[in-house]
Image (cartoon, rainbow, N blue to C red; front, side):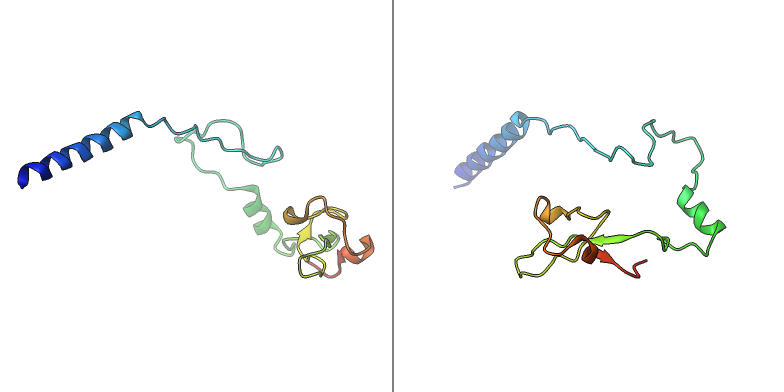
Length: 119
């Protein structure tokens, strides 16, 4: 009774080991960033002391400035949703659509896509 169990276990372990050995290597990790990213393309130097980001410096120098200035205009997507209502996601400029509604027309005119008092 013991001999067949040992044989089955040996076959299973060898099959598992062979499968792990023959598996193709994982694809290389590719990290993509936006072209206007504030991060440097230079390699990181571990010996260099850490620097604070400009965002922290600006916020400590001028606390009266909010996250978004009042003259920046905020727009909504405005494309028709499954429910039939205009999409309320924020976008960067008039006429742009959110990730979900790219290429779809807006239900509302451009002047109705402006969010007043945002910020």
